[in-house]
Length: 213
DNA sequence: CGGGTTTGACCTGCGC
DNA sequence: GCGCAGGTCAAACCCG
Image (cartoon, rainbow, N blue to C red; front, side, top):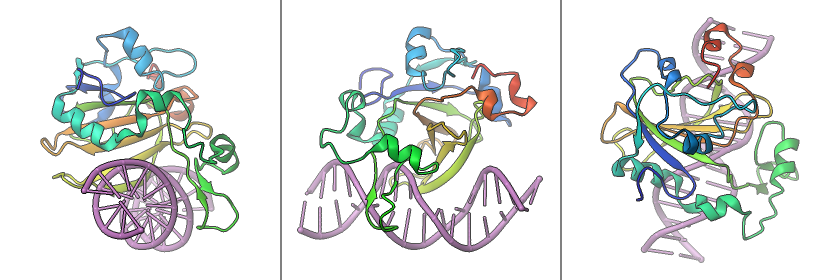
C-alpha cells in the first residue's frame, strides 16, 4: 500500500472533518497537493476548471481505510485497466448503450427484457476519501440520487449506499459507506467526472456559495 | 404529482 | 464449474 493511494487508479485521502450537523460544511476543504489533487479530483472539477477546495487536512488513507476502500474497489480498476478498454473486448457498446438507454449505463440490449443484459464495466477515474462526520452523505454541491444499497460483509456497519449524479448527461457515481472500525468515519468513493458545474445541479442558492466544488 | 428512497431480484466477476 | 459478494436495475413506496 503505497501511501495515500489506493489500489490502482483510485486515490484515497483521509479528511478529518469535524463532526458537523450539516455535511455541506465540508465544502471548503483544501488539498495539500493541489497538482495531484487536480488530477485525482478531476472528476470533481467541473468543466470550467474551477478548482476543488477542501477545508481540512487531507492525509493519505490509513492502511485500514485503504484496505477497506480497496476491497470495495476490487481489482478491475487497476491503472492499466482504467486506461485501456476491456481486454476481453466484451461486446459492451458502452457509450452507445449509455446514451441510448435513458440514464442507464448498462442496459438490457432491449431484446428481451431482463434477459441478455450487456453490462459494461465502468472504468472511470475513481477517488475515495475518508471523512469523519455524523452524516453519511457529504454535500459536495452536486445533486445525487440514491440508486441502491448493499449489505457489506465483514463490517459492523454493513450498509453501503450507491448514489448517482442526477444531472442528465453526468455519469458520476458515488459510493458511501461507514468504516467498520469507526462508525463515525465515512468512506466516500467518487467515480467518473462531472460534465457540468455544481450549480447546474444545485440550483438552489444554498449551494452557490461553494460552487467551486 | 414529481422526484427521491427503499428493497428485492438479477447479473457479473472473481476466488476456490 | 460453483458459490459468493459486489454492483445495478426497477417497481413500489414515500414525501414535499
